[in-house]
Image (cartoon, rainbow, N blue to C red; front, side, top):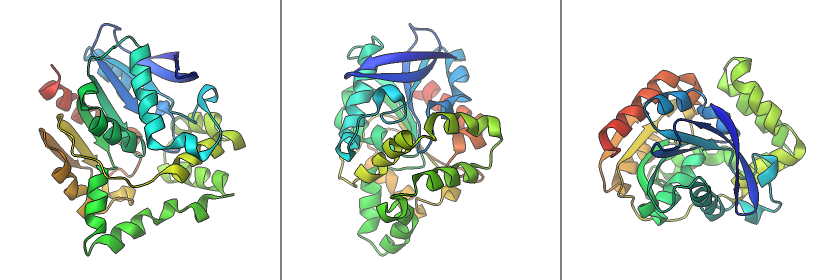
Length: 274
């Protein structure tokens, strides 16, 4: 893996890159409160399979791309960042493969739904299509899903960013070498304010179904997506679809079950990447 910088939209994004430059491009979006380091187990394996895998630190997560103001962290800003990063990597208008986990999946679904011509295949972990949330919110299961999402209420975060950050790292229950890079990158007041601005700007908005081949991996123990919402995700994928349930991992599946996740991603690509 190589550490690189990508200049796009007036910002400088730090990223991890692996694989041949001429290989099919995969962009990998991390979750919160993590960084591109979250993909360090998968990047070499994707590269070995012949892909050019690039995991950027998203807006707010690196010093060169940390604008002020909650309005700078709405979904569309992240979407435009990813499209610009693909352009700067020389990929042009060709569709790339998109993989995401946790809140990074929110961006991935939005990008795939609004710019389907840019996405060859999609793989999302934990967070389903927003339509799945909206569907269950209008049924008798709404209270169950609202309870699972209540931990992101602004009233719980404001003024307690460092506390929530440390709690999230503790919940990972992983060796220090897996989590120390997050502390090094995000423990400052400036960084945490930017990171949690993503939550503050987050709104549940309708989105049309996606049509590209899609893999959705749901870790029930993550605790923030109900079974009803996870199963409803199928209603919002019109192309080939695979739904996998993880029995062990929580919201940190990439690092808790790296071999399983890598295998599922490679199988997805083997079946659908041209």
